[in-house]
Structures are given as C-alpha cells and as structure tokens.
Image (cartoon, rainbow, N blue to C red; front, side, top):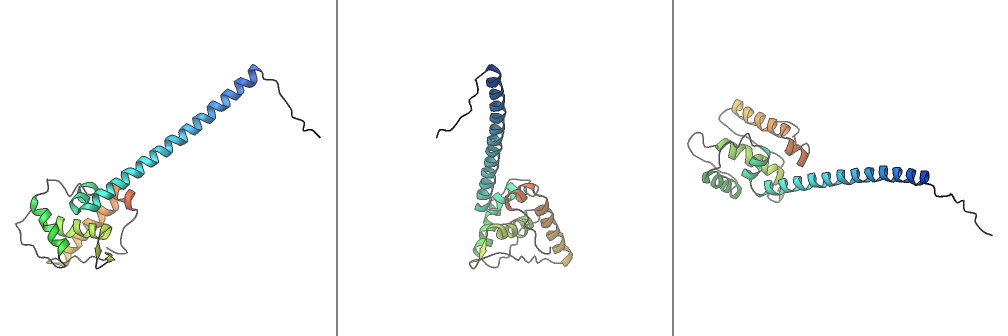
Length: 165
C-alpha cells in the first residue's frame, strides 16, 4: 500500500506567499529574541545592583537612595558603619550634620533587613530610638517613603514593606 502524497507545483505565487510567511515569522522570532535579550539584560542589571548593595550600606544608599547620599561619603561614615556592624550596641557622639542619622539609623537598618543577619537569623524588626517619639516617627516615615518609592529597590527586591511602619 502506498501513501498518496499530494504534490503542488512550485509556482512563483506559491514561493512569494511562502517568503512573506517566513518573513513574518522571522520578524516575530527576532522580536521575541530581542525581548528575551532585554529581559536578560534587566536581570543582569538587577543582579549587579544587588551584589554591589550587599557589599556595604553606603553602596546600597548610593544605588537605591541617592537622595540621601548628596555628598561624598567621608571616612568617618565608613568607620561608623564598621562599628555598628561589629557591635550589638553603639553610641556615636559626633558633630551636627555629619549624617549620623542617615548612616546609623536609615542605611544600616535597611541594609540589615535586606542583606544582614543577627545571630544567624535574618533581620526582620528594627527599633528606632530617639529623644522623642515624634522624631522616631519622622525617621521611620522617611525610611518607609524611600522604600516605597525607590523604583530600583522595588524592581530588585519586590515589596519589602513591613506590616507596620
């Protein structure tokens, strides 16, 4: 028993139709490839930002919170952060306007939640202690606002808001 195969004559019209279809399909495949390349590039950018931010709270600040990092970081900023990272409790007496609050309260707290561990466990809770409840609320509100509105942070980590601010 033989299979009957329908054969069509190859005509210029048939070839032209096939070329058009192949061209459309090639365009679709190229668009999909380009979309995948762009997504891969975005993924690599996210991975690179996260890797850099994980190295140090000041790098994280420069990447995700540039509004807080309006000046070049002084050596004392790095020293403060090393003290905070090395000890459970740290008190810093330093002149006004050297970014103590930004460095100690805001950056190290957020960095700790995103990348840090305490006694082998992830950091999930932060206590902000200041001279008054109003001042603590101002700091927490500022941190919450920056977390909620940093497009790069949202892109890299998703929604990291706490259950309450």
